[in-house]
Length: 458
Image 1 (tube, rainbow, N blue to C red):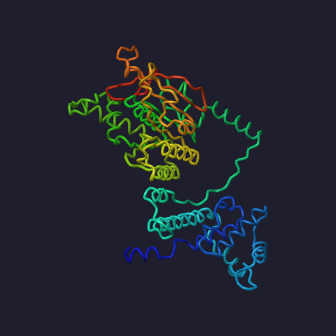
Image 2: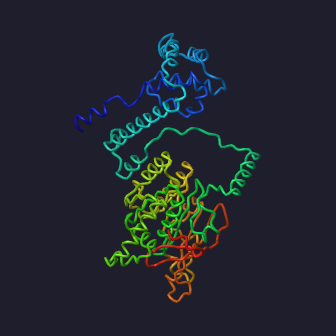
């Protein structure tokens, strides 16, 4: 460790005294601000006197009373301080310091913003402390150095400030009223669920609801990636923000397929350098048209961890630029300490549970692709079933919806279903299961199109 490194570790931990004072004084000045900042733990305050004052405020507010200088002073006076015959009121600086809190608040209505600063700096202190723990564990300061896999697990488990506690108890009557309001919203055409954009599929599939995780499963070369991208583009064309995490194909490769399909240019001609001037003109026109419609954003990063997915989604959601997250595919997400295991059932279970939790926390629909077991290849009827999901137990339990992609022409060259793909709804919490929709599959561009309407050509 260099001298500069030592200086970094020995510096004063990040904090903002003025922001801490503004939060304390903001609540004292305007008790209505408490509802916006009550989730802030006392540990978020770096200065000890501020932690003590916040604990006293929390105690008073938890009792259903408003806080003011009188009752705050009383609570602190009744608590014994560290010094002989001293009270906690003495420890925090006395009545004069409490009075000064209110006087040093720039704008009480911005208390939540000041609290966000305090919370962010608390998260940074937690992160720094965690980094030090990892360094100590690697060096074996308190015992034997941790094995590399265990050290990776420790490094990945970055602590975060506790979330705001909330009550999830709902009375039966309130639940009924909520259900009625939901039905009214659906009847008015204001469903919160995102449609796939394929009319044939939307007649049997009830869409991607906020907080849901949908698994799209298929054997290789069936078109699961193409279906997911087709859905992503149709959702984006409706003005929604869609983020695609492509862990298998580069964004340019995905765009090539979709663009050629929209321009009615043979993908093979484009890739082999045989595209004519007319073809190029069509591609340019299609790109301009598609840009006006709205398109998904892509992140083509082959080595992406579960934690990186969580950070990206949280950031985009906070910026109000994420309505649908599509991940291609589940098995390529890394979990530090778990990658390379002979049996990756536990790893896939961790990823599945993590993505479902992320969907709930962000109130966000997530679509994740997953490969099926090759055992179905030995059956006469090769249409997928729930048991065909690789390491299906955890994934089947976490998923709200499961869609399977099947093309009979892949196995049966003499089938009368040439160019037809079956989208089998194996599971959906908001509608019927074991139903099937049929879509047109263009093998030359590996893209899907609705049989019901030509308008699905974007």
